[in-house]
Every structure is written in structure tokens, then in C-alpha cells.
Image: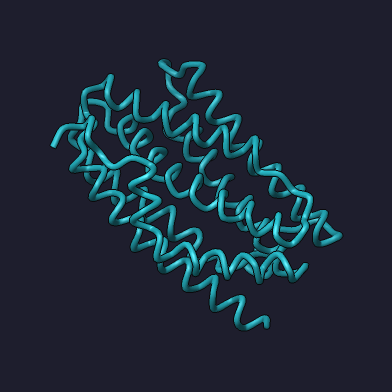
Length: 219
């Protein structure tokens, strides 16, 4: 199977259909509970911050270009966007402490374990940090676009005036950029992407389960 026939976003959406109802139900409950909603927004902020920090730590070299800087700045902006919404929802400044987030250990674990898995797989490439960054970003953007679309439906359904339109557009742009860069480096393989998506799915299901448990506990 060539890189050109790797799973598309539509394939991702179809394969994750069993999770869509679960996450939608969970988010519906979250947006109708102001304290939970604030903590969820703060968790999203923390995850976006982890993403921007990872880009800064692994891509700050002599070859750093405009595209990567733009990606980094957009991830920082996303972290700020969710943080601002969280603070507004809570009526106070929120911290990245477990008490101010939902399923925080599993949210961190989701990112850290996926990073470790991908980094180990590509360690023998000529530019392992660059290749890991591209793959990691691509896999995360699949989940981000899917999740944010569901989140927007929950927000609209609850009449919450928060728009994720610009964030979604940027995440979709990142997805296309990572695919193009992997193809240009001639390291992109559909076999790898399928394995990485399978690993991400396992980690996401664990996180989703913890989010559901947190919502159930607060009900």
C-alpha cells in the first residue's frame, strides 16, 4: 500500500463512528454543567499547550521555517483561546492543576505515550525529530478536527456562543501540511499511519472513558 492510499479523514471519521455518540453524549453533559465545562476547556488548553511546547522543544533548530513557526504560534493561540474561555466560564483564573481539569493524568498520558510510540518507531530515520513531529502532528490533527466538530455541535445545541470555526480551519490546514511534508521527505507510509492511528485510538478510548467517569461522578 502506497502513502497516497493512506487513511483519509473520512476513513478516520468512519472508523471512529462508535465513539462519536459516546463523546457527543459526554460533551452534551459537560456544556450543560458550568464548572465541568470550565474544567474541560482548561484541559483542552493544557493539551494545546503541551503540543506547542513539544514543537518548540523539538523543532527549534537552524532549519526552522515559517510553516513550523506558524504551526507553533497557532497551537499557542489555541491554548490561549481555550484558557480564556475556561477562565471566563469559571469566573476566575484557572491553573493546570488536576482540580481545575478533567481526567488530567490521562490527558497528559494520551499525548506523552503517543509521542513516545511514534518517536521510537522513526528513530532510525535521517531526521528523526522532524519525522516524529510530522507524524505526531498528523495523527493528533485527525483527532482534533473530529473532536472539535463534535464539540461545536454540543456548544450549538446548548446555545453556548463559542465558535471553534477558526480553530477547525487551522487544524485542517495543519493536517494537509503534515501530509505534504511527509510525502516530500519520502518517509510517509500508509502502514505507519495505520499503526499510529491504531495506537492513538487505544489511548483516546482510555481518555474518553475517564472523561465519562468524571462526568458521571459530577452528575
